[in-house]
Image (tube, rainbow, N blue to C red):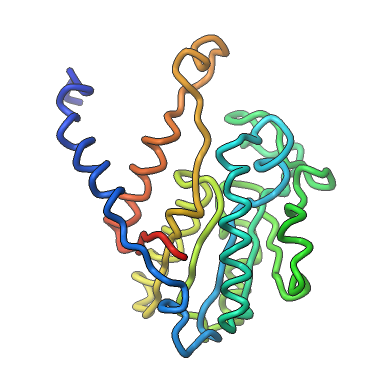
Length: 237
C-alpha cells in the first residue's frame, strides 16, 4: 500500500469543496416530496432513543438537538397525509459483539432503548412501527426487510436521526443498494438538517485511549458519500 503523507495539506482543496457542497444543499419543502401520493412515502427515524438523545454513555448534545427537527418532520408528514412511520432503534442483547467497539448501551428492557418521549407521545404514535436492532444495521437480523416486502407500494423513504456516518448511513445505503440490485424505482432521501453524529475531540480520545471522531467532518463527509452513491441529500422543511 502506498504511503499517505501530508494528508492534511493535500486534502485542503477537497475539504474546501466539501464545505461548499454542504453549504449549498437544496432546501426542499416536504410537501414537494410527498406530492399527491403520501401512501407511497415512509418517514424513517433511526435511533431517536433515550440512549443517544438523553442519557447513557453514548448520549450527547449534538444528537439531542435533533429532537426538535425530527419531531417537526413527523408532524409535518402526518399533516401532509403520510401514514407510514418507522423507528429503527438499538435494543441490544448484552452479549452483542458490538460492545467490543462501543461501551454497553441501549440494552433491551432499559430506559436507554426506549423511544424518546417526544415521538412516543405524538397523537398518531399508535401508527408508528418500531423495529428493534442489535447492530448498526436496520436491516441485518431485524424484521425491516420482511416489513418492506409487505409494503411494496412504498417507493420514497425519508431518513432522519443518528448517526449520519453509522446507523443512518447503513440504512440509507442498504435501501439504495437494494433498489439498485433489484432494479426498483425508489427514492432514498436523507434530511441533512435532521441527522447528525457525535464528536470526540482528539485530545479527549488520547486521554481515554479511544478513537477520535470529528463530528463535523464525519457528518459532512458521509452525507457526501451517500449523495455520491445515489442517495438524495437535502435540507427538508
